[in-house]
Length: 392
Ligand code: SF4
Image 1 (tube, helix red, strand yellow):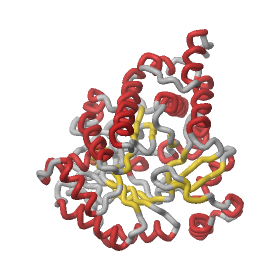
Image 2: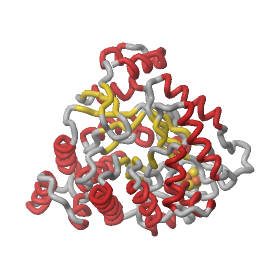
Image 3: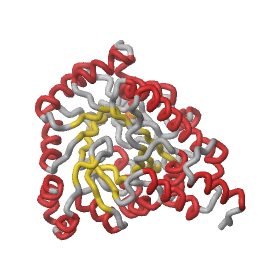
């Protein structure tokens, strides 16, 4: 393993003081021993967030359709309309899923789909109104920039008008899905028809200007270089600076995971990322993103054990319970579609932190009763979630 030179130690000391690193300095971090980089990342995590607490959200993913005409090479989720297992959910099916979320004390849905060319604007607006009418306590964070771009082109609305229309119907936030690596040569190879980086930032900037919740994302393992990963982080940091300065609201958090390629056209072609590489990238993101305190560990792609380790590599949050995850798991992941409150409580508690249930903006809603959560046997998870989620 490489030993630290005086220059390396000076770079890490600069990072630990919280001073901003430039592109060459961020790129240099990739060649340093991971334990040293991780120690700085964890120190910054303790400085920038509540040092004792690890947060997570009780929510549900809903994928309203799997029909998609973008056809990303890394996607095992999408179907064409003619495939037998293609679907588009009706409003009652979506309501039924939200009722299950309400039963476990959840507070938001993350609703995204494929880009389904058959759906009219009214499907989206009527769906948002239906959810707000029947589930008024649930926040709706929905539609990736890819879906918004499709709506913009298809319905002939400029972006401002489109977002105003969706907000008026009930939209609370726009997930930053589809960030992957925001370098267009990587994007063009992985998914020729995929939204390009300029449009991704244009749509999220407009959402932030309108006060919508957004998060930033990153996926590694396409074969991108370290310099390209550093570029990705700097583009996100620049947007965060701009949004916080101009609108007073930016990305609420940052989520990163490694590419999953099972059942996709990239299987055997893209390198993916090992646990070491994931943890290294997470630590470097914590160091580089000095304006984003809330950094998530990803259990759907990395598994519970690596996600728990990530709490010492810069992550301060375990994401959310999801209840249903269809996109990452379709391409491999760890075969997990959901996490229970008990599982996330245990991960945080066993790692030495106080678990806390948060809202979308990473504000703590309540602290679960850890002992009650851990005492309950696995077979009674539904009951346990109800008790833990609603009670403490
Ligand atoms: S990643 Fe999204 S846009 Fe790409 S094919 Fe899958 S569902 Fe469609």
